[in-house]
Length: 282
Length: 258
Image (cartoon, rainbow over all chains, first blue to last red; front, side, top):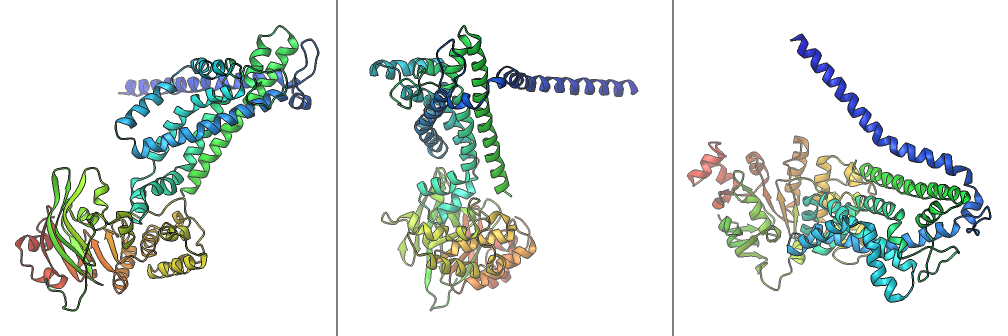
C-alpha cells in the first residue's frame, strides 16, 4: 500500500517535471531567437536604419527605410484584397455553408491552407508576373492574399459559429431579414474574434519570403509604385544574410529585429482584441 | 370555449399541423385567441407547445425541415399566404424566448431600439420616446434609465428578460408570444414577468408557453392543453383547471403524469 503511494508520487513528480521541461523547451526557441537577434542586431539599430535607404555594397551606413515602407505597402495591399474575401467566405461558410458548395469551399480552403507558400509564389509568378512582363509589388500582395484567405475564412467561420443560435433567432423574431441578422447581429458579435484572427493572419504573411521572391522581387531603391518591383523586410533579410559582406550580415540581423517587432506588435494587438471581447462579455 | 360575444378574434389557427420533414409534432390544431387576452399553452415536455408557438410568427419554417399545413389567421388574414412577407409578419407578432437573448454588442438603449431601426429610418426623438415607453411597459425603466448606454449584459437575468420583452414591444406588435419566459429566472424575476402579463394584455394579445401549471393558472384567461402534438382541451383557465372535460387534462393538471 505504502509502496504504491510512493510509486504514485514518484510518477507524478517525474511527469510534472517532464511536462515542465518540454514547455520550457517550447518557449526556449523564442527566447533564443529574440536573444540572438538583439545581441547581433541591436547595435546596428539607429535612427538612420529606419530613415535611410540601402547604400551600395562596401559603403557602411544606410538603412532599410525602403523595405519597411515596402512591407507596409505589400501587406496593406494583401489585406485590401484578402480580408474582404477571407472574412466574406468565412461568413458564408458559417451561415449558409451546410450544403455541397460549403463543403467544397471548406475543403479547398483546408488544402490551400496547407499549400507551401513557395508554390503560391510560383502561381502568382505564372499568372501575374509573366503576363505583365515584370515583377511587381501587386503580384506579391496577391500571393500573400492567397495565403491569407483560407486561414481567415476558417477562423471567421469558427468565430461566427460560436455566436449562440438563440441570438440569431432573437433577431429574426424581431423582424430582421436574414442578411441583416448575419451582418448586424451575428458578425458584430463575432467581431472581436474576427479581428483577432485577422491580426494573426497579417502577422503570418508579414514575414513570408518565398512568395515574394518571384513576385515583388526586391528593390534597392525607395519605391512606392505598386506595379514596380518593391523591397520588403523579409526579402532584404534574405539578400543581406546570403550576401558576402559582414556589414550586410549586421544589417540582416537588425532588419530581422524590426520584422520580429512588427509581428510581436500584431500578436500583442490580437491579445488585446481578445481581452476586449472577454471584457465585453462580462 | 366561448369567448365573450364582443371579443375580437385577433389570432386563430385553423387545422394547423407543424412538421419536421415527415414527422408531425403539432397535429391539426384549431384554436382562437381573442384580442387582449392571455392564453397559456401547457403540456408535458415534447408535446409540441413551443413548436406551435413558433408557427404563429413563422419561425418554425426556419428550423431544419420545418413546414406547416393549415392556416394561421391574424386579424382574419392568412399569415401563410404567398403575399405575406414573414419578416414583416414578425414585426406584428413579437416573441420572447426561454433564455434572455440581449444582443451582446449593443447597449440597453440600442437593444430596445433594434427592432425600430430595422423597420426603417426614424428620428432620434421618436426612437427616444419609443424606447422609454417600451422600457416603462416592461417595468424596467426605473432600473435602467441612468445607464441606457451601458452594455445590456451588465443586467441581471430577470432584467435581461424584461429588456427582451421591451425589445419585443418597441416595434408595437399586436401579438406577443412568450416561450417559457420565466424558465431561467428566480421567483422574484418570475413574479415581475407574471405581473407584466396582466398589464400588457390591455394593449396586446398574449400567448404564453409554460411548464408551470400554477403560472398558467395565475396569468392566463384561457388555457390550452397539448399532449404529444394534439390539442387535447382548451377553455377558460378557471374552468379547465377545476372541471376539465378530458381525462388526460385532469390527469396532467392533478400531476398524475408529465
